[in-house]
Image (cartoon, rainbow, N blue to C red):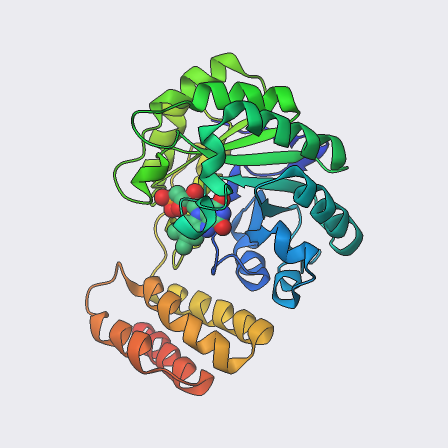
Length: 329
Ligand SMILES: Cc1cc2nc3c(=O)[nH]c(=O)nc-3n(C[C@H](O)[C@H](O)[C@H](O)COP(=O)(O)O)c2cc1C
């Protein structure tokens, strides 16, 4: 059991379940919805340091946080320290947040071809220099999110982890895949236990955390201090509660029923609509709301209806209320 609070720099986490950053998903609405389920720390979507430096209005939208949202880490990505340093000045002047996170794992070609995201893993020495400059500049604790390496022939996560600790990083999340694996293939947790012997900062394990069983397995194999819920939490927020509760008590909570899922889907939908407006939010919700019902037999038709045909809040909520009424009969 991992029952005590976790400390990142001077920030106390009340839970060791971390909400993973996901571009296009982990908006303020999503983070506020997920927090009460037992999230110890949330991360924003990745924020371009260039976007901040060029005063791009859409990039500034990512800086919105709230009291409920905290502790919150804002995640920057970029390819050089000058851009990062001026972006940190902008963050510190314009955003309320607790931890600065640096994205060193993004596999997307558009990002890595600039030298950002997981491209940093190819040059650990330059990475250490970059991260040292960031840690010196930031008044907040700095965390970093990495992968095992660029590809299976260049797994260098042990060296990179040591260099990041040397540079002043206070918390490290390891997505247990290489860049070339993208999001497929099985996450390999075993190497983290070796990293734990080499560094003393807390480490979070990420990759394939879709069930409580998987979270237990990842923590047991990796000996990590925390576990990250990313794709597994989309449409299954109670997974966070199940993991947090298990880590604190050793007890396993049963899965929620479909009525409860529909109520949570409505709550989340309302929050996203409030943040983004009906037109944009309902289109995004088509991809997310069906996931609340994916484990339930007999809900395929309604999942398809939500995914393909909902254009208004009224239509979406009528479908969700139908699930609640049917389930309560
Ligand atoms: C749609 C999507 C967007 C993501 N965006 C980010 C991101 O902006 N920054 C980041 O560090 N990781 C990002 N990730 C990686 C996740 O945080 C997580 O490490 C990864 O999905 C592995 O965990 P999982 O298999 O449990 O989902 C993203 C993943 C997905 C699926």
